[in-house]
Amino acid sequence: MKKSKALRTFTIIAVLIIQIAFLLFIAKSHYDLNNNISIIILIGIIMSVLLGHYVLDLHEKDLELEKLSVVIWVPFGAMCCYLLNSKTGLGSVISAGAIGTLASFLPNINKRSNYFKKISPAIYCGVFVGMSSTVVSPSMAYVVTASIIAGLFLLLSKNLFTGFGGKLGTMAFMGLFIVYLIKLVS
Image (cartoon, rainbow, N blue to C red; front, side, top):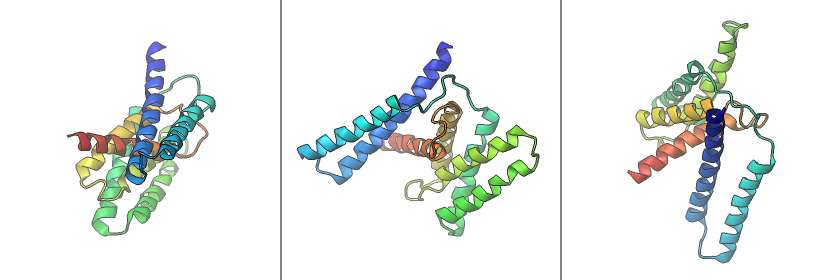
C-alpha cells in the first residue's frame, strides 16, 4: 500500500513540477521577469495550477498500474508517426491522424479482448510524441527515449486524471520535456 501511494504521489508531483517548469520557461522567454506585474501574474498562474490539482478530484483513490504489455506500444506509435512525418513529408498532423486511425481499428481484430482495446490509446500517446517537430525531436533516438519516458508516465497514471481530456498528450509532453531538459543539461 505504501509503495502504490508513493508512486501515485511521485506521478502527481512530477506532473506539477513539469507544468510549473514549462510555465517558467514560457515566462522567461516571452516576458520581462524584472517587471513586478509579470512576476505577480506568473505566481498567480502557478498558484492556480497547484490549486487545481489540490481541489479538483482528478484521481481515483487506488493506484492501478497499466500493464507493461500495453505500454510498449507507445514507442511503436511514436516511431511510426515520426518516420511518416520526417520521411514522407506528410506533416505531423496527417501522420498522427493516419497512425491514430489505423490504431483505432485494432480492437476490431478481437472484439472480446481487453488487450486490443487498450493498445489504441497507448499507440496514440506515442503518436503525440512522434508528431513533434523535427526541430524539437531531431533524431529517432530522441523520439524513442521520449516515448519510453511517456510510456512510463502512462504506466503510472492509469487511475490519475480520470474523466479529463488531454491525458495522452500530457504524458507525451512530459516525455518530450524531460528528454529536452536532459539534453539541455548535458
